[in-house]
Length: 245
Image (cartoon, rainbow, N blue to C red; front, side):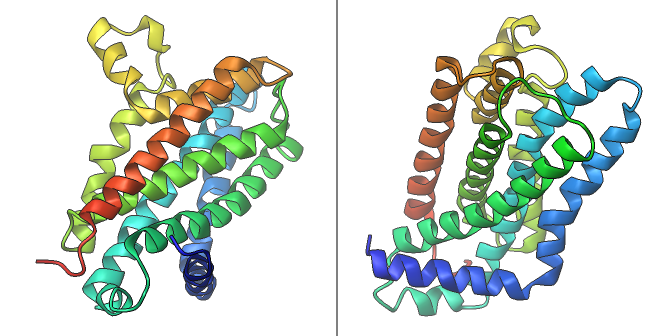
């Protein structure tokens, strides 16, 4: 990996992103809209809103970044941009980590805005700090970026890329502990939940929700999600193709 090339790649992706107003609207506006709906759904049940909104602050960046990244990388390949880029000294790792950093910065902005509105406008109450919630949300977003890059290698059209969303994201959301506590699931569902990275991200957020200081479980979960990000990026680099078949 070359630091200068990585910086140039990250800057190029951020410049492209800043010119795409619809994508910026999706990144910032959709989580706020959904959190607003949650607030009014549970306005007379603050504990329920606190529990669900805290988890959603980590789930929304994951879903949005997975969708945006898989389509963005597919466009790079189908328009020939990727093929031209790979004729330069740019390496696959530089490109993929450039995507991870650029969208990670966008995720930091998204998480900060969503957390700010949740805490100061909707009265979200957690024992731990908002900073830890934002940190976990950003790592979750980078996980979505990495899985989106990996899945884009197996799609030939934007429609196919979107089809990976219910395959990759929805099972993780259903089994992460949002609807049923993981230790109350039947054994085989709990076993599946234990190998899905979003389960650890949600557990880390729940730790922040009930503990005023960071716990060992929270840091372990953060490390697991970070390891999954690295594995997904390496697999994405190994499967990255210059063009669709």
